[in-house]
Image (cartoon, rainbow, N blue to C red):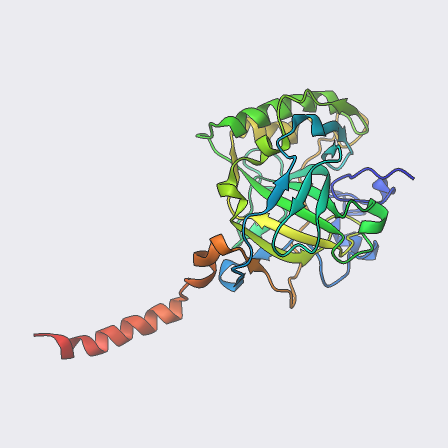
Length: 310
């Protein structure tokens, strides 16, 4: 059996679930695979609750700057999914092995103003979210989903910005041009390879500012086999680029639509899981002062200040 990576779904039953229709939407996924588990994704990351881990330094990326590693782009009916040639490797503190990139895909809303990221930070949802899917020690997908740490996903928020101008924007503009070749579900196109995966990821402050937690695939069967690395700083793109994803792809094999929009899973309960903040996010994880604490400090200062007046 050949496994394609459609939006993080590793089963061959692409048509048994959906995002928008009540009879097959996220509320019905509870009966599919592991979607009713206790280690589900995505989650809302609360910065003040994240545990600072000083050992979480920059992620180690190999081969991501090679444009030739981007192979094919496919409209799965659920997302735009890009397959990758072997040779892109991920490692770093907190990861138990070296992981090999297999594909990347995206989640979005219904246009530039319709937010569609899966994860959130302090309740903020971004315009889009990029997921780069890796398997441990280059395992097959079938074996990786059986390992609690078999998959590592790098997640990047994408936010629309009128002021966005950079080499990263140029790469995304080139990437978005390929969408016209996969307008209908099932269509596959070749990439022109004028950009690399690293170009799409941007500099992201050296890939040092991120959150790490154990979770699941965000599509059925929601296998709880993922180490998530969610970067704190969004990639900024012009609204016209964001809009192309929600207006150029059909969720069926008809060119008349319906359009592929709002392809994100609702937030899941974090339960007793711990979210770790990387060393570069130390200030975000440790200096937060709650409103009650601020009030107590103010009251203390107001009480004792007269004793120090001249």
